[in-house]
Length: 193
Image (cartoon, rainbow, N blue to C red; front, top):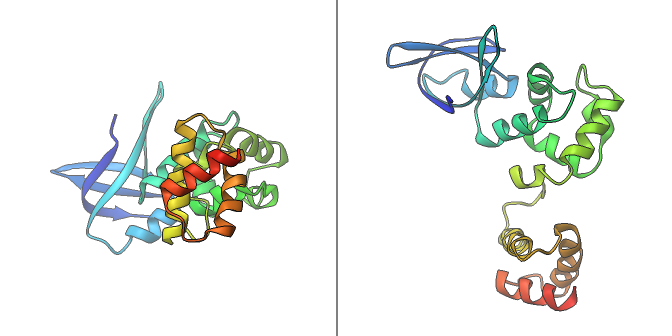
């Protein structure tokens, strides 16, 4: 499996690129977001996913690991193939897709060409609890408070506590103790569940 390419960008178009890795040129299908991220670069690292078919080996490339992970989650949904996945990743950012799924925003998903109501609903149902691990769906993900919250939620999940119920209780704890550290959050949440 080819999971990453690091080399010289030889050719680039909005939907594909050729990356020269030690004299071997790899044709990679890319999203528009990846195109924007790498179009002015000479040496690039691109995260890839190889799909092997009877008639072809197709390489899909992404500027970030989170974009690749969202693509992989999308194509795991019944009815969403690589072409639809690339269309979604090209139309919306990985963060926008994760936020749309976290907030049940069917309209946002349907704004992508080729994604109808049934497919959008299927994506929401299948990926509801899977994408928040890949992409941080918190808007203020950069703050220490949210980092502590995310770490505490992960710890509680390891202990077998469902994330949704833990998050509700933890939000109440955070409203009383906004600067709480991870250990305090875990202990207080466990007391109140």
